[in-house]
Each structure stands twice: as C-alpha cells, then as structure tokens.
Image 1 (cartoon, helix red, strand yellow):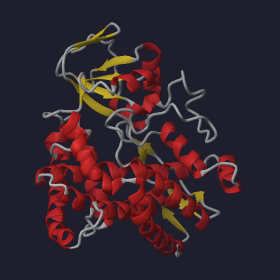
Image 2: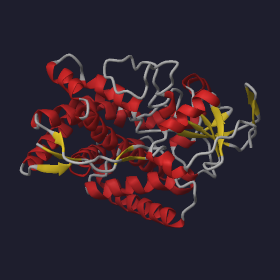
Image 3: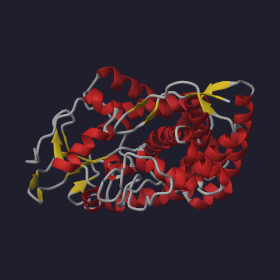
Image 4: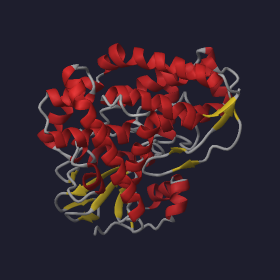
Length: 385
C-alpha cells in the first residue's frame, strides 16, 4: 500500500455524485488512497496528464484485474508494442476517414428512421428510446455484430461495465457479466464466416484480416462494446439534458453562435462519461512524498481532471463557450480512446443536431437521475415535445 494520505468516501454518495469528494481530494490530498475502492486516486489534471504516459511505472497490464478476468486481455490491458500492434490492426475500423465515408452515411439514415418512429408518440425516454438505440446501431456497424439486437447490445455493454466496476466483489454482478460475455462470443461465432465471405471495415473483419488470435479478437470486440455503447449513449442523453436545462446555451447553438462540437467538448469535461482509467504499479516509485509499491491499484480520475480549478474557473458550471483544451476526457497517453473519433462524429454530426431539429420544442417531462463514478450518465430522461 502507498503512503498516500487516506481519504474515505461513502460509496453510495460517490456513485450519486463523485464531484464533491474529488474536489476535496484535489484541494487537500490530490493523490489519495481510498480504502473503499482499495486504490490510490490521482485527481489533479497535471499529475494525470504526466503520470498516465509512464506506462513503465503505471502499467495497463493487469492479469488479475477485473477487466482481464471478465473480458479477456484486450489492447487496453497491454503496453508497448503489444498494445500498438493491436491498435494498428483495429484502426481501419475506427479511423476518421472510415467514420466519414462508410459508417456516417449509414448512421445518418438510421437516425432519420429512428426519429420518425419516435415522432409518432408525444413523449419518450431519451435514454432508452433514442440515445441507447442510435449508439447501439452505430456500434453494430463498427463491431460487425449486425446480428445483435440493440437492446441486447446495450444489456451486454452495461453488464460488462458493471462487472469491471465490481470492486465490492458482488457475485450476482460477476455472474451477469459472464452471461453477457458468452452472448458476445456467440454472436461473434455467428458473424465470423459472414465477414470472411463478405469483407468490410468492421472491427471484427479488420482484426481477423490482420491475423490477430481469436482470443484477442474476442477481447477487443468486448472492449469496443463496453466503451462504445455506454459512453456515447450517456453523452447523447446527458448533453441533451444539459442543453434542456440551460436554455440560453441551446439558443446559442440554434442561432449558430455555438457549435455542437463545443457542446460535446464541454459536456465530456463537465460530466465525464469515462470517469477513470485503472493502472497497476509495475515497480516501486516515489512521486513527491508518496511511495508506490509494485502491485498497487491506481485510478487516474479523468472526471476530476476536467474539474481542476487550476485550469477551469467554476468547473461545476456548464459553459459551452469555455476553453476546454486542457481537459482529458479520453485520456492523454498511449491509451487515448481509440473510438473518440467515432463518438465525436456520432454525437456532433448526427445524434444531437438531428434530435433538436426533429423536435424544436423538446422539453424535459420529469427528473433525469445520474449515477456512476467510473462511468457516469443518466439512467432515464423523460421528454416531451
């Protein structure tokens, strides 16, 4: 265990709203050991920006980590050339060009169809009926698992997210995660002969063509689903909520005084859908006055970095015209989120502009509770028009 100052949290309160506790840590103990998470948290932006790149000290390789045990050893749990080899193999499916030329036209059409269907009613749950579905339909294309229903894709994504955050070791959460990964494997097995006969730019196809072992293909597909469903879903719904509760800023976007990209950048700074990235100490190290010991668990808190008062005035305030350049919602090192370009295009070019164009009088019709600290977003959002 490190000799970092100890900070206690109430896990229920932390899941409901982690930002007050993170602000306290930034001010009083920016590198804190939190017994309830059995991890040492980095909470200041500059520490995270610097230390995340030091993979020789803070390694992504975690053979005993929850993600590796539950989902297999994906590229996020590898460093150096092993990581870069799989990242390069996957890049053709996630590149900005592939998104622009192949996925975006298909997503655009799916969004139009979905919004037309939703418009037949006078209300909906924006999380369940729109954000979840358009995120899943995008992910089906990108992964190659077009045989998986949107609801099932959302279920297995949430099950893996819950499993990877199951630091309390609840057996029912672990069992559900295993059920979810089995479902993904079954869908992969069904699609392999199809994509090999009809090659495309999906992640499944490009990894097989690159010669990755099947176990790596499976693990990376699960990684993409765990990171590519919940976060866009939560960002679409969450950013919509932010605009609906800040009418003057929504008016700025509608008038052309602000852009959808500014909305996206500020939202993922303000309420980070990806709250943290775990690491394991690879060898003993001293940072400042804190001694780290090999084998310790480390959390780089991206959500806290986005609220660092050294860079952001009134960080708890949603302001789409602020400079978000210093924020690092997708990481800052070699493990920068590979799907960031896909998420940005989906949200800023399709999901948000089409939603507010289709429903210019969109309004909240009830409370929208948020939850989570490792991954954060609204659980429901009743809206009407």
